[in-house]
Image 1 (cartoon, rainbow, N blue to C red):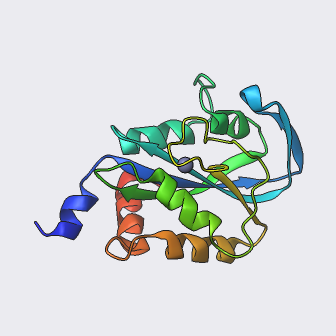
Image 2 (tube, rainbow, N blue to C red):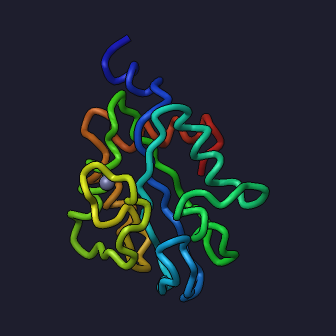
Amino acid sequence: MNKRESAEFLDRGAYVLLIHLEKNRCLRIGKLGKLDFPAGYYAYVGSAMQGLRARVERHRKKRGKKVHWHVDYLLADENARIVATYLFPSPNRNECQVAEKVKGSDGVQIIAPGFGASDCRSRCRSHLFYLGSNRPFCREIIKDVAPPKLGVRSYARRRKACGYI
Ligand SMILES: [Zn+2]
């Protein structure tokens, strides 16, 4: 098994949820309080150091789950849905690195400071990024973020196998 294959079989690391919000919404996000979310696309960066795929499946379930993470409050809104999922398998905590890369792309905005970043070791301002309303632009950003040895294509195959979009 080469390096690339072994990393693909890892079930831990970071993930990015591409979320689409149909309408402008004002939502209460736990202790962060009420925040305004403009309609459009969002990238949420999270991680699971055990059961990466199970975590993503949990996020994709609309009903029957307890609101636990900030992103649960956003996804609980009927106007929000996950339109794509990207996995970044890694043996180490890599979510802040991924978040940093998303943040570094032109046109990306932080509209909810502290979102998903309460227990962040790198003191990120947020793990939720507003990408605007252009879907191809979102794809380009994720492509830029994927580490070169684990290109977006390998995630796409994996997602297909797991029934992801
Ligand atoms: Zn972080």
